[in-house]
Amino acid sequence: MIFSDKRFLYWLPAILWFGIIFYLSSIPSADLPKMPSEDWLFWAHRTAHIGEYSVFGALVLRAYSYKKVRVGVITILFLSIFIFLAGSFDEWHQTFVPGRHGQLIDAVFDTICGALGMLFYLLWVKGLYLPKR
Image (cartoon, rainbow, N blue to C red):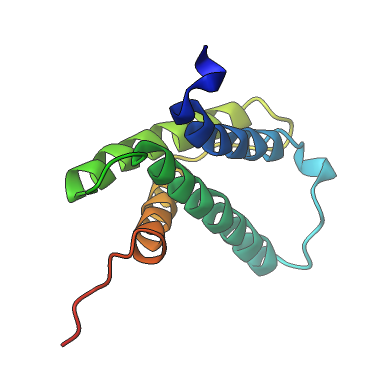
């Protein structure tokens, strides 16, 4: 059964987290908190993307690297493409939400944030430390 497989349990947090991202992007703009200025709106928007996709990147790498000893650059690039596709899907989805719009630049930004989340995951959990000079 799929639920007894440990791999599913490792992917479940990433799937649930993307569900949260998808839910948040389903909120019409009229129901979002009002920002005092365009600058505040810009930074709130960027901060949300950083938080959402850095966590998503870490969870995706955690799930993918289950039972793997080494994670290389190719793995990070492959998973970055996966995160780009997920972010693109979410941006496309937003084009159907009243008052919201999708932007390709946001999907690219999501990918960068996801890659940073994967890097932090490697540094923190996997014990990959940068050499000291």
